[in-house]
Length: 447
RNA sequence: GGACCGGUAGUUCAAUCUGGUCAGAGCACCGGCCUGUCACGCCGGAAGUUGCGGGUUCGAGUCCCGUCCGGUCCGCCA
Image (cartoon, rainbow, N blue to C red; front, top):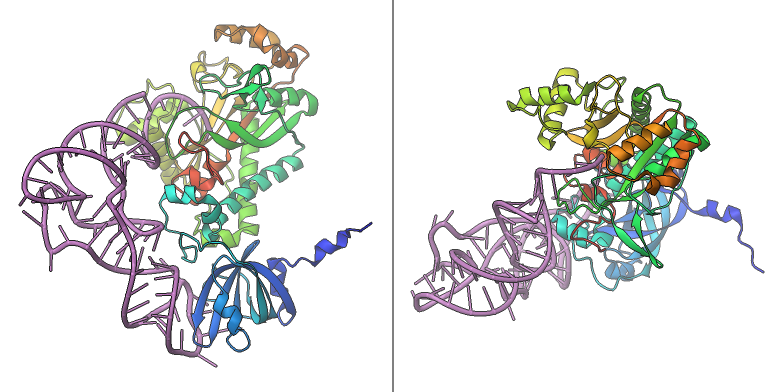
């Protein structure tokens, strides 16, 4: 019998700890990001798990290594960590570099990279970038984007856990769709047809009666044949649903709390990525303006000198105009829009008793793009059955869902944030495919 | 599903409108030089069936038709 010792894991060096190790002898692994050869030797920039590290190697005694060294090799370098004056922090966010004594190539790639990963900015056509995703994501700036995306999920988990939410995992293979309108993918399920989840909505609502507050981070699938920079057919949804709310404002406040947390976490733990990507991070807001859809149409109408009052939803140009208005007037980059008409919202949306025809629902706009939809849901069984009928749906087909209502549900509401969209607007990236690791769209199923 | 745009070295682009020294540049690559670079620098070299098929023409990357592939935007939505 062999034994795997838990403490063995502690022997793995992290780049974060290297700064404190100046003067020590270490052996480090990494992949060769770039090589700058000079007459006396070379600078080797090693790509490691959380950053880059400059390594200095002289010719003497290392002739063979230097001759064979090339990009994307896996290498092991031994030497002394020493203080370094690094001009460009994107090369090395640390304050040390490795003075190499010896090294070896652990693995040599079959072919050289077909794109120039050593460039500071990976200047690729989006199509080339996506086709070569396993390679292009190795570039420091490309992988930094997904690191920011990680921060947003970390903050979501952490904040909601602190607020008493339970993280759940709901099925992605379903018997029916939750969202009206959006097309749904069909899959073969043994001898039956099943569908890919468009949203964890039903299960979140059931979860409210179980844990009172639930959250899920998971994939959702939309079979819409759209071809735009803000749509993909599989994306990551940051979901929450909470019981005993007094109104949708409670849900909106919870979202604000999360956003503040996310921005604080980014500032605290992701300064390397933010600097590398030259991110203009918003100040954590103390409040966010909230307007009705009618007001939004009016504001957009004035900004664009066009009449939107008959539109049931916000046009993309309106989203941009409304955001510009509140940035200029209030200095705020977030805007809530509320009271969407009944026909534009799913059957589980609570109707507003004050303004017939409207629902207690909201969107959150950020930098010109809708990144969230949420609202109060129907908790009363009779009310839900009646609304299903009004939508032309058969309540019998929603029997397992309606069990939640039938056996009692607290007043509740929730929301869903599009992770890739939030990340893209935060980073000022035009196409959400670039904030998706392996995007799925109408044309793309690989890599 | 609709509208518009594009496809030229490994890669990012120029030359297309106005057909004729128009097969060009940067980076990557190969060779040489460089004792601190940091998107290193300097000198030299190799690299393209201009997506594919057809047509017009003395001549097509360029104009026309077809076809394949892709992008942007709209409907819808996160």
